Image 1 (cartoon, rainbow, N blue to C red):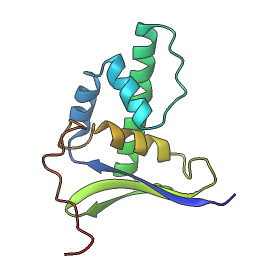
Image 2 (image 1 turned 90 degrees about the vertical axis):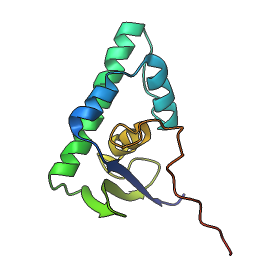
Image 3 (image 1 turned 180 degrees about the vertical axis):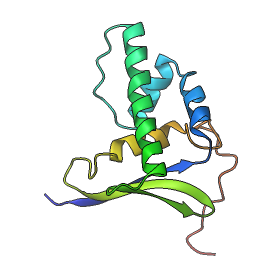
Image 4 (image 1 turned 180 degrees about the horizontal axis):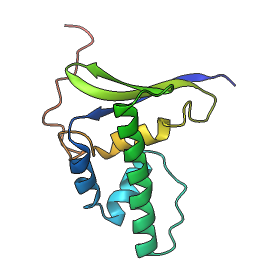
Length: 135
């Protein structure tokens, strides 16, 4: 069994307050889709109100971690500019586990699109064209 190098990054394009406003609109179905897409399978669904509040708190905590990595120096994550956009980036060697403590938080918030300009994860209208292998 070998190790893999894995990377998580999250675009930071809107203020934290806007990200939190977006999060407040999430439904249980939104959380379910988000957790499936981000491979977060550890929630115990015991009741709608309890699950909704647990999900909100979990994602809000991940959002706080991402913003902390963006605003402060961390030994395991950094903020940087790529193609004129700010990102929070972390990564490292993985042996089947997360390579850093903030890896799953950054991955979750990136998957949620909470910090991106375009909030609809299914809208690819502004995506650049795919690069062709050969011209």
